[in-house]
Image 1 (cartoon, one colour):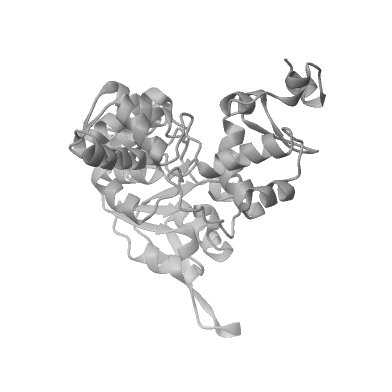
Image 2: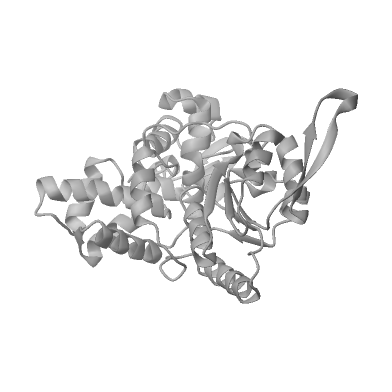
Length: 357
């Protein structure tokens, strides 16, 4: 996940990683819904966006610029393609890190067709000169191209056809206010409920020609960390298991056994997540313990523990960040089937006071 605007910490080769790999990109192209009616989840964003697009079509105008924020794998790219499809317009896809100079952006903008959708992923990582050029392009559909250098440089205004910019970001707070204010619609993508992910799994299984029952889909959905991309990845791995070691039908038992083979437990924790919790509980009694010490105990880099494992553990209520260090919650002890030291001794401790009985 992206936690810095100028760099990223790559996730290890994890089945539950939210970032897309090469296989995901190829498969997602076949599984993406084509219109808002097929899109599962994000009910508020979907309804609001539907109104924006229908109103634009009725006016015969291009849609307002759209900003989509949220964690990786929740459907920002899919929604951008749906926006283009709903408006009957082509789409151009690029990313913030690919635009390092204002000239890079000017080349893209000058080649847009009228009404075209420009999808700019990781928009918060775009260079500052390009960002300032984007202000004028979004508001006035015009850019100033600088010709020459030094005192003889001349700014030549270049008129642009009306277009729709769809920006996607995992960190909306890093966008400067002048850029955020130029988006006519802003939608925040939430993590999916298990029931929504179950619908995603059923739809993907149908498209992949995989036979799955309701309980099997629910088992996969419950381990997908609220993310459709992870649900689809787990479905493909369970499909492989069912094909090789079962009769090809995904049931709850088949899904649970398959994901046990791939080390994804009932709450979606994988080997790295459990290693962090086990070190925190077994070696340090539940904490508090410093991040660097915890990383050494796990045998991982500090950044890997902080940026890859911790966000999900905190969101699941299994780990807490405190001024004194990382602390395990009662839910962490229960999930690993361990008894907190104060309960073993029949007494109380500081951790008991932090989280209650």
